[in-house]
Length: 608
Image (cartoon, rainbow, N blue to C red; front, side, top):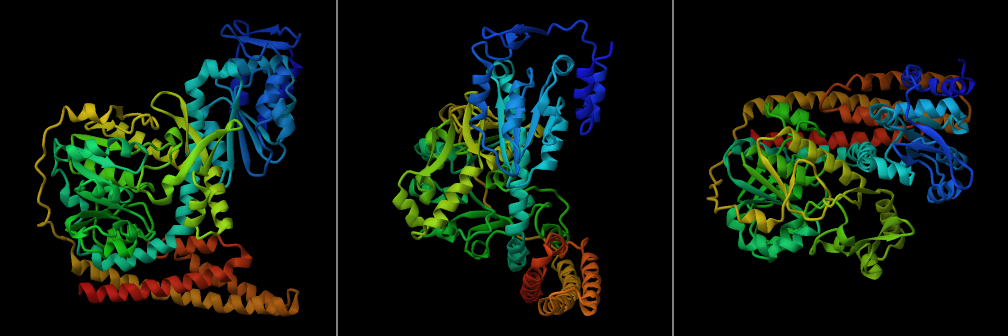
């Protein structure tokens, strides 16, 4: 029998999700156990799996309670988990006009049933989209969001009761997608240029340091402890001090002061920061410490005296593909933006049988953001107010002091942090406040454990974020099973890179960079003439048209360098620059490339 309601609903779905429309057409509803009933206030309700989907006490009030918490703003994605009878979707659509509403319903039979009996007005809106498969939802989020997107998830109490774990999983994955966008943009737009410059500045040091792969398998069967800066670190500091002979300690740079203050000497300090973190080593005798650093770690850290510094050269970041080629490195390493991951991969490479995390809370536990002795970071707290989590300083005056009393900068920083707040699943199975980038890191740590089951991964960051694949065990329980470890003498590890081969690559790189720089200068000259012509005449003259064509040809020449490992990022910057900022971008690139050329030339004199 013809069903006009179903056909109309399907008409709008088919416009953006043909696969869902086709799946819905194949559903046979004759044997469905879903049924319609009425609430005590005579509103239609849905009975599904012996559960009333909407509130029997009042559907309108339920919707108002949920929707009132949501703000309508540009560049937002509001996910609704569960279609129900469409009441919540309609209410959300009435409020959200600027952003997008993504509705995810896990049961396609329920979708077909509801669409066959109820006309859902929201489905006709151009900003409302219905999904049944997770991969289709994630793909849509990935296409629609950028690092400025505001992401929320709403659901009825009934769906929370029926699908609690799945709701968390879907929202966490959505946050991971957004987190990756944020990290990628931060990396590409704000760190890459600086990191490329630092990598070249550090090259003469890098080529004289041993590679992390020289330590492959040296601690086979032993136990590693990776110390991060989360709140749980302070809880266990005495226990670590009294048992530091039972594990090899990897300390992320931010924890070093606290460890040294408590007479704990880490075996390795891991630093992948482009920012200047030298102040974290004041008063510490670094000549007695071993470091693991990335190529792009701030040059001040590369230049400090250590017992030994090992190179951690990933294959997926900044200028590293060219440096790896220069040093003829074949092995794979990854950096995902958190130093804990780099420490974890280093420890795994060394062959440890057990790897323990401490201070990897990756959430704001009991309102705390960081462990003690972390500068002003420890002065932030996370509070629950008006149905949402918010970060704020415990001591506003001290916090403002850390920004040299610049109220605008302090406010901007807090606002930025709060825009990136989210919730993740705690080890206790409950939502806990966190950051979007933390949720991204959680996912990567989980995947690492899943892909490397020959090692036992233990998370002693008690009551923090749940990291699947890691056993949640208190440190005092783990220590009972451990014996003392004989630490290896690393003084004799030396660089084994082929310097002659590296010099050949540097020479050919210099030729390529100088050619690229010449093309950049030509483009700048033409662009300046074009800008001057347009500013004087205010209209597109014949000369302006001619200059525009020359500029286009110059840009095409620059784009031809996109496959070069040395210049790919600069081409990316040019392609993503708006017309009105193109000249500024080109001048900045000119300065960066000139600096790289000078530093490469200096590097030759160090290693020749």
